[in-house]
Length: 298
Image 1 (cartoon, one colour):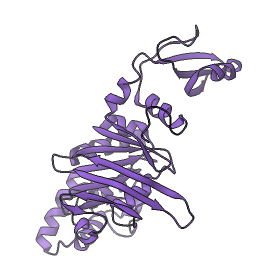
Image 2 (image 1 turned 90 degrees about the vertical axis):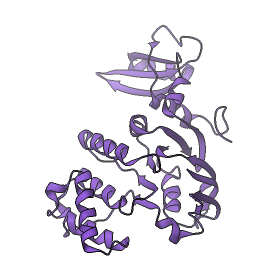
Image 3 (image 1 turned 120 degrees about the vertical axis):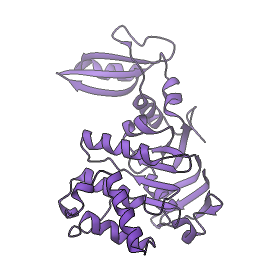
Image 4 (image 1 turned 180 degrees about the vertical axis):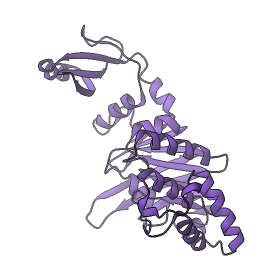
């Protein structure tokens, strides 16, 4: 288990990106969910030993990832938000390069490792193609392959599915699910709620550098049981409904507005019918509440 305790980070611009972050991340896939600018990438870079924290600790298997960076790097696999491959190298050459960087010097051992990794991410058939010609999904799968070199205990992936088409997103989800295990923790940092809903056993929501809540996706959804309502109304009714209802999402459809609202205990109006809650409802409700509202971490 990764234990993060009171991590703080303020940039030279005086922006406080992390405000006493404390988390426990068990084995499996853990979702870190939050809007852009919430502090997700700052936290991921600190855990990946690429950025210094101002204070706090992050310990896993007796190693402090903050103070003992060399030892920490032997345990880490990292797929950053923007991963720069050399476009003129093939997939095989790329993994060969990263394997050498990670200390796999024996040629036979390195070849066997690369063969296994390319097969695992379904890129074996294109091993001799240049990475510059790969699709976004193929590059992400190659990124996971390099992150798996060295059998890491902690794998960090930052916004991995942004820009992927639905088929590649499902393929990437399956790959992450196969990667996590009893002794491996995967942190999935994202603003895409469906990524967390589909594959994460635990999650945390971060906003303005603070953890608002930690729970499982089913626990989150269960909190909104019989509290989510939906209505499709003319556009001119939207302002009045927003003034008297807790609207969590609105979407235009065929000239009408489709609203989802939260109302606990009573129907919000005759226009509304009960709706099955989903994780997006919980997330949007949480991040739109004023700071310090009930249900949030202090």
